[in-house]
Image (cartoon, rainbow, N blue to C red; front, top):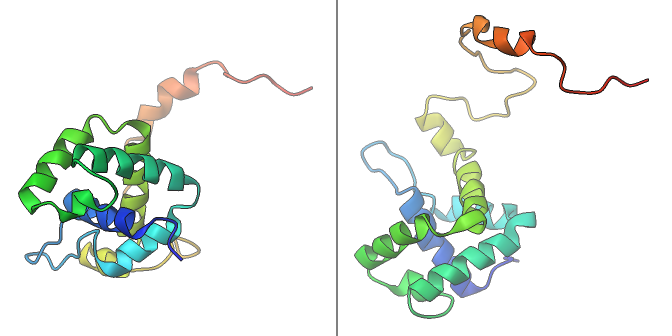
Length: 149
């Protein structure tokens, strides 16, 4: 069962499609793909209230209640979403985080990015070594914690 109403879910799908649109050129699904959207809904958990708050503000900007944003023409949705991007605050930030997390854990997306679709552990992933001397200023700092005992 979805933590959001049908109207909120439609608005979320429409917003997710603007956040990460599908790309036929690269064979990438959009964040509104049914599998990815289902994962987003399942993963909202503690961010459900923020999602509702962000979607309500988006619907208000669209001129109505839940589902209003999704029913607008695509160009109008994009204009509203772009204006909302800077005003959405923490609620939109948290919703955006959930959308991104779910999108980039989709197997199709991982394969398209040249990654094996699997958890990072226990096999791990190769990470190119960087310049470890960049940590020297941090190593030279006095401890910022209090020693126990």
